[in-house]
Length: 184
Image (cartoon, rainbow, N blue to C red; front, top):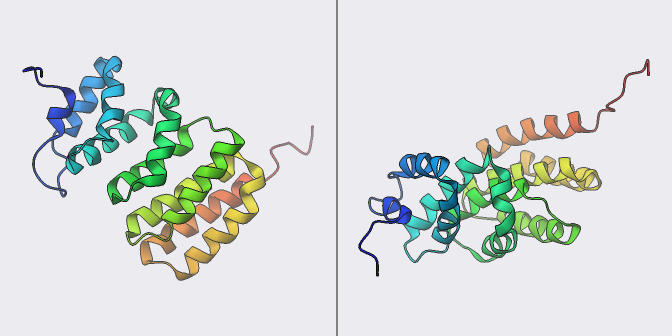
């Protein structure tokens, strides 16, 4: 066992209401991207706080570097399918649509997100709604069923789901507008 601190050691301690030193980890990995796989490992850690904060850091880093996720596609999809930890679920709902997914992978991720919209956590539900829309915009054959689901959740969900749902429905509707000029 090494006596040197690891990137995951920075994510320990405190409680679930705190992101701890996640910002330091994000900054360190931006300087040293070779450490990114350690964060993916952190999402499988025994300590739920480390898992939660590793997922938060992965989400933050892959907004600008989604290609970093691709080597971990299978692992992330499997984790999303089996985790019950709400913090992992809501971060994975944001991260998975950033992957280049095969049709088979997309079917699996859609099934996961459909389970997530049944979660007890309103945050998980709301991010799952966002993930479904992100996938539908990438794969237009999903627009109609996803629009139906988002419409239903917007009518019946919590205030945050209703608010997000209205924005997502606008986004879905905008994605179906023809992208050509009538003069062309």
